Amino acid sequence: MNRLAQTALLFLLGATLLHAGTTDLYLRYVKEGLRPLVLLAGTVLIVTAAATLWYDRRGTATHERGTPTHDHHREPRVSWLLTLPVLALILVAPPALGSYSAAHTGTALTKPFGFPALPTGDAPLRLAVADYAGRAIYDDGRALRDRELKITGFVTLDRKGAPYLVRMGLNCCAADAQPVKIALTGNVPPVLRPDTWLEITGTYTPRRTKDPVNDGPIPYLEVTTARPVPTPHDPYDETWNT
Image 1 (cartoon, rainbow, N blue to C red):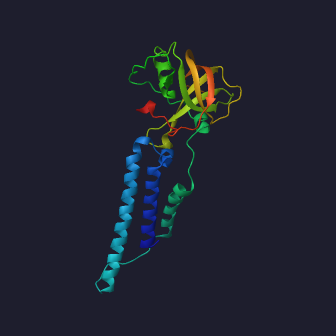
Image 2: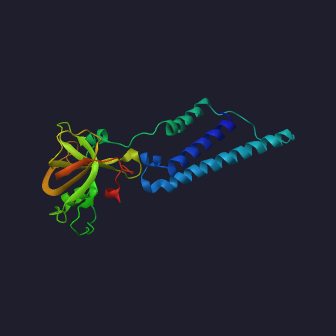
């Protein structure tokens, strides 16, 4: 790999990061709050590519005038492996982690530091999966009783076919994603396909179970209705680690 190839690779990788950061593609890899860093990294790579090209052109011009300059040399062929992540970003847009990961990973529900007051009113209360699970387990559902709830997540099934509503949470990036799960009871649809996104309307129930993977606590939700919904703009849930 010569200097020109290195420059082209840096520019291509930087442009790919800028493309990911200006679209929703970056959400497949990192949490939403890291968008500025993705854009910054792309900008730095493009500037580095431009500086490298300028330096190489300047060195070539100096050499033509007869002034000693740096020696041109080729990097080891293994350097071409750096093209693989670039091609992966360009050609492959992996889906967000879904039911397979959730079924093989124990619930990551942790006790929050506190529970903010919930909005009042007769309209259904919209909650994140982690918010409902945390309040149901660690606050005994005090603020959830006698409230109609709406919760959105994707479906996963355990080995016995029991359905769960799940959202994956991120600490930093998709590599450390972990699920928070809600078990479903009541008017559950008779046929559920894993990875289907559902908006569940239901009510709190004190019933609980344990995750078959890590024995973590999982609350139940009494389902009233369930309807399929599109995959949300950001499929990951950061509620539980904020």
